[in-house]
Amino acid sequence: MDQPGPSGAYARIRAGAPQVHVPDLKEGEVYQTSPLRQALVDLGGARTGLIVALRKDETLLGVFTIYRQEVRPFAENEIALVQNFAAQAVIAMENARLITETREALATADGDRRKSCR
Image (cartoon, rainbow, N blue to C red; front, side, top):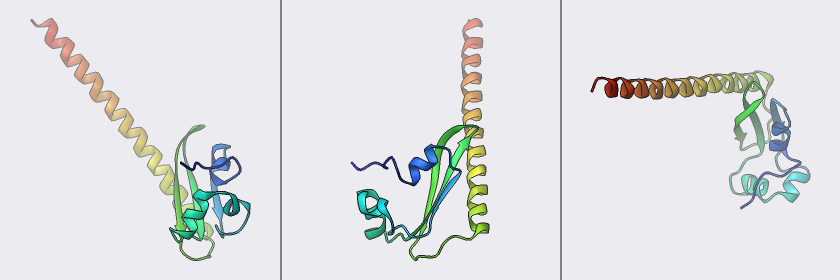
C-alpha cells in the first residue's frame, strides 16, 4: 500500500506546518514519484489541493484534505474558512473525548455504588 512520502505535503504537516496549499497537484517532483499523488490526480481528478492540520496543542490529530478539479488556487478567505472549520473539529473531538470519559467514570461510580449497597 502506498503511504505519504517523506517530502510531500503530509510530511510538511507532520513537521508542523498549519496547512499546505498545492496550486497544481500535477506539477513537481511529488507527482512524478508518488503513486498516491498520481492516483489522486489521474483517477480522482484533483488538481488544486489544500491540506489543513487538526492539532490540539502540539499533537497532530489528523488532517482535512480538500481539492478542486481545476487548477485554481484557494483564496486566503477560503483557506481561513477551512482553518476555522479544522479548529472547530478539534474542539468537537475534545468534547467527544470528555463526554466519553465522563460517561465511563459515571458508569464505574454507579457500579461501585451498586456493589456497596449489596
